[in-house]
Length: 142
Image (cartoon, rainbow, N blue to C red; front, side, top):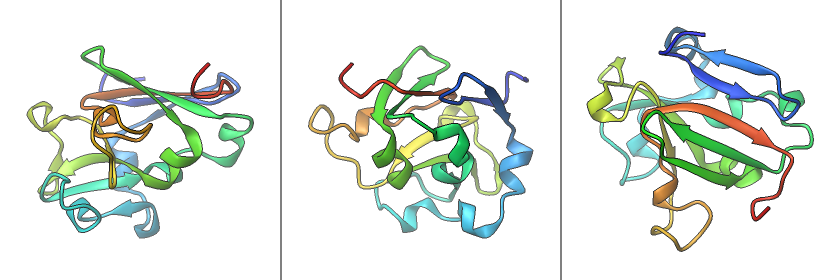
């Protein structure tokens, strides 16, 4: 796995590496070409992968939550089902790889996020420099 890859660890512990090139090759149903069209609070001119398209059903089996980790040490634990419905992984801006200044190389964005500390899917769960997603069988509060 490259330092530029996003690591996803399935509920059974199996790791998978997601590269920028892989994300660019996703079919139209698995990506959002303008995240701002989903949420006016989203960064402008960004393309994202739908999170649910990146995690296979078999990899989710038994999982109840996910831990998101950024390269800067920031992390958030989210309820899996809700996150899969509303989260996207931003990977490019203006058709170029997302720069570190914009939260790259990968940035988790929650569509219609609540204010920080008011709900499990809040603005504080937006992880810049996203480097790892770990699926867990533990419920959110465990």
